[in-house]
Figure (cartoon, rainbow, N blue to C red):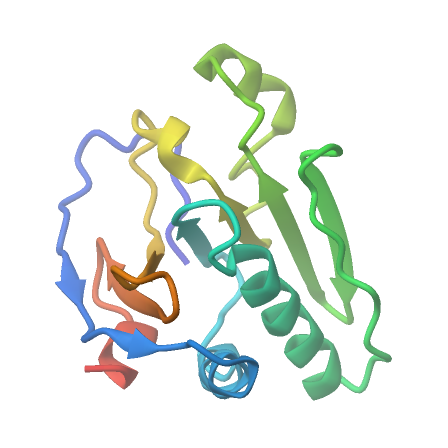
Length: 168
């Protein structure tokens, strides 16, 4: 998987999926179950959207599904809002779940060792502060409908990716 400190020559390919309805918990679980089939070591999942739109629930569902598929007991997946990082060892997979909501300056990221472990799966809530990091990523953009009763997910990537292809 691509992990290189020299990101200046990376070409950006953006592809997008249609709006995926995740208004109820069952539909969200169906989507995350499908996505977890395609997650690979070294993937960087960027979760964007307003507060309360379902980013942490999505991360929890992905992590629990990976645990299930690897015959590991499901664990409680908490929001890393205060700790900034929670790690989950799932057999040979290291899943790092970040929440960058409280990070205000890019300099604060230096202590997090983001993207240094090439085989880790990084799930990153509030990745907007990573603008200068030109890393291959799959973006999951969570949105409320105009009446706030429904939620949708749009998946895109800056490289050709099976997850995006699956939801076209």
